[in-house]
Length: 323
Ligand code: NDP
Image (tube, rainbow, N blue to C red; front, side, top):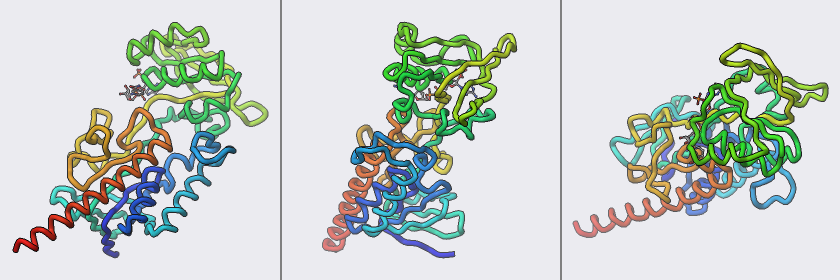
């Protein structure tokens, strides 16, 4: 068991964490990234990435994250394969965190980039067909279904927005919802119902995702949630949009969150309610949730962290000079 001391501890290793690390390392803050259970984050479970700027051709999610990790390390970040299991924010800076390994981390400032996870139905075929027709992000993958038949599962804002977005690529979009009314905002519902490319299937649960002979998604097995009647829907792509869960368990009761558990920050900044504690990426963003937006927020958090540390050092110097 070791104690690691750093000016900036970054918890989480998606685009937000790695970008924060790149900026912090280049500011000579010698950051530590504690990588967590899924080093590289959500992009390591996607395949083709076509919307991250800088690459004309499609790149693979795991490759992109490995490049970011390697860049962060190259400029001076220490990567530690551990998972933070508790944090002490109450006593202010320096903050203390404990890793699953038993190691202790002591940091002058903290950047939380623990991300969020898409919720899945848990239905047979859903995981096996990930990247082969099943996705949890229409903005990321919708483009691959140009002119094809697609379905979105869910009835909240995300599901409706994804269905509307998919009409940019497909004339055959089906929204599948388990009840007979949507929880999405009325304005989104109006747009949905007015769009001739979208059909809504009410009171339907997805029992399984079935592959065709080519190993790609072929159809969904549906069950009517009222009558129990079984049916199938042939689709090329299915987007599960039943919500996301931010990884904020660690911070319950310690940092302000919204009702869904996303960390609240000062608008337009990564600053949480505790000076020296910053949040970036999907852990604080339920609206955009893109690799590029997370990376941008990571950069902002590192810059604000650097300013926080500089101001603190300046205050200490002034106090010493006054003595
Ligand atoms: P929500 O929790 O709002 O909606 C989830 C939807 O998925 C619900 O319709 C729910 O059904 C359905 N669902 C949940 N579990 C299952 C399941 N096991 N089987 C079938 N269906 C299921 O999540 P969203 O991601 O839509 O939104 C999250 C938050 O982000 C919300 O606060 C939302 O308003 C916000 N948001 C805002 C946006 C904006 O302002 N532009 C855009 C996107 C999200 P049921 O209704 O029956 O419970």
